[in-house]
Image 1 (cartoon, one colour):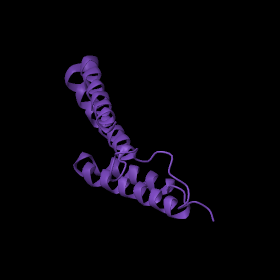
Image 2 (spheres, one colour):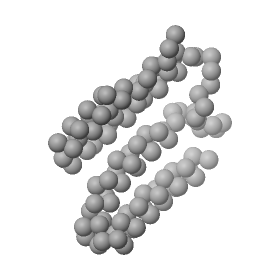
Image 3 (spheres, one colour):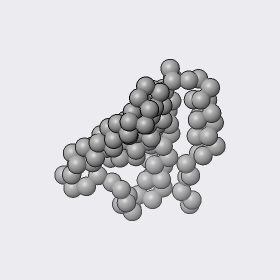
Image 4 (cartoon, helix red, strand yellow):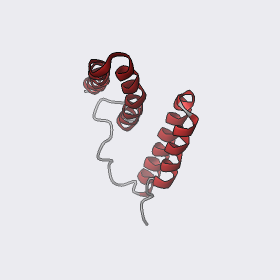
Length: 113
């Protein structure tokens, strides 16, 4: 039995649609992409139930691991936020924006430990 692959063609088409629709549909786009990724990961887990996932929640962490979702959301948020920062404040705006995104990710990671 083969493990299902992440539908790259679907994600490529979704990214193209996102560019055409503009920033008004970012939330719906992100939710759709995260749902697709989660479905693929669930299918992989169901295909090999005896193996423990490499990046699952650690001991003492109940529920689901949202690391992948956080990474995807951070990357998707970085694009428009960086553009806004550069337009309004130039290079310092870009540095502040990316620093804020990094701090959010570091805080999320430290909170989970």
